[in-house]
Each structure stands twice: as structure tokens, then as C-alpha cells.
Length: 143
Length: 160
Image (cartoon, rainbow over all chains, first blue to last red; front, side, top):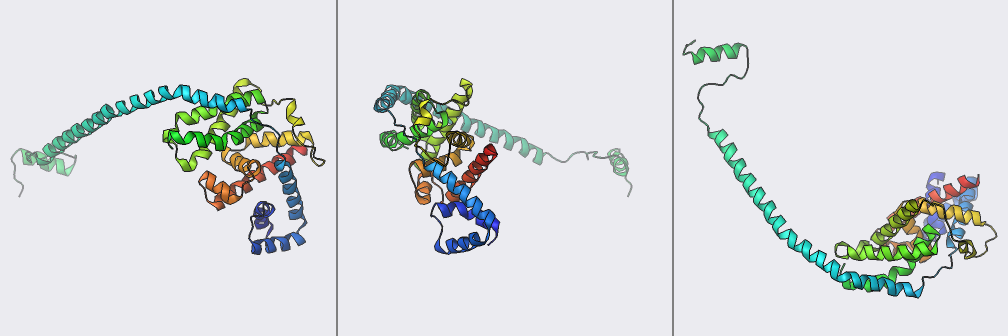
């Protein structure tokens, strides 16, 4: 096992979350690698510090205060929710209507463009083709 | 999440959130105000919160509110005098080490700080943390490895 892999396993090893096979391989590596052993001892110290739990307790009156605050706010929250629900109906209708109108305009525009009869040839470029088109428009026949 | 589930959710999470915010602020009076604000903010959006990610969401609110409060108060480093007295005596680590650790936890991204808190405050296994946060066990392991690597580096750097 390489040190890089071993470093990834040190935390789950200390947390006793490593499988038996991985534990054996890691311990074999630790036996021969001083730097990984040092790192393990640093993680162990961190673990000890994190395990120290501050003796702080939440006062009982706080629970009641939170519940009271929620109870007081409930009608307002429901009113906001109702208002929001009522607002969604016209917003949805407006969106659907605008999509419908947009589609209609789109269909109309593109249909007209596609079915427009081919009249006089369009001049789309300069050069030989342009000369040919001008001649064509003047009724000259080059054939 | 339904609003009628709030009561049981509050019971299950009030102590750990209280402890988490206290750990970030180090001040009991601020913690009391913030805990109320956190649960209030949670309840306001309860209809839009998925049950599986509710704990993560609650921790995120707590983390953001605590840091915003500290920033606005202009006292990013502030602790009650009682804070260090509440710690049991540890021969290996000084009070300064604990303060470094506390500040390092405060600087962690919220997800990393959450897994650390769930593991040490609630003494949860990786599987239990995964269930609480709606993550896979492998993802929890990866978060804990990252979190402890950052904490270890910070403590080493400060002690140099």
C-alpha cells in the first residue's frame, strides 16, 4: 500500500468503519511507514479533541418560546400561502395565453414566407449571377 | 415536509442545533436568539422542504445565520467566559487548541461541519449520518476524510 492510499484510510480506520481486509493492509503499511504513523497520531489527537463535548444545555423555556413563535406566525404563513396559490392561477393562465398567441404568430409568419409565390428572381449576390439575373429581368434570353 | 411533522422534527433537532450554533458563536445569548430564528426560517419554508434533506437544510440555515450574525456583529472571534470552563480538562490539549479547533470548524464548508457535528455530538456511525443527510455511506466517509484533513492541517499550521 502506498502512503497516499493509506492517508485516505486513516480517518475511517480511527472511526472503526474500515473492513477487516483494509485494516490488515493499513496496519501492515503503518508498521513500516513512520510518516503515516505520525499522521495517524495527529488524527488521533484531533479525534480526542472532537470527542470533548461542551457541557452546554438548551434552557427549557426556549422550546416553549419557539413553539409560541410558530403558533403566532401560523395564520400569517397560511395567508401568504393562500395568496401565493391564488396568484399562481392568473400567472399560469397568462403564460399559457402568451405561449398560444406566440405560436399562432409564429405559424402565420412562417407559413406566409414559405408559400409566397416565386416572382422575380432575387438578387442575392454580385458577380456573374447578378449580371445573369439583371439580364433575365430585362427579358433577355442568353440560351 | 408537512407542517404537522414540525413538532417531532423540532424535538429531534433542537438540542443538536443549539449545540452547533453555540459551537460557532461561543456565546449563549446569541445562540438562544439564533436557534429561534433558525427554526422559524425552517418552518416558513416547510412545505418546500424534502424530508430526506431536512436535516442538511436545517444545518445550512443554522450555519448561515450564525456566520451572518457574527459578521454583522463585527466580532468574528468572541466567546463567553464560561466557554472554556465548560470543557473538561484534557492534559494533551490546551484551551488554545480548542479555540483553534472551534475556529477551524467555523471555517469549514457547511456540509463538512455538519458531518463532523453529527458524528461527534450525536455519536452517529457513517450509516446513520448517511441516513440523516440523504447521502451514501461512501459520500459521508469522503466528507469526513476531507473535513478532518482540513482541521488537522489548520491545527498544525496554527501550532507551528
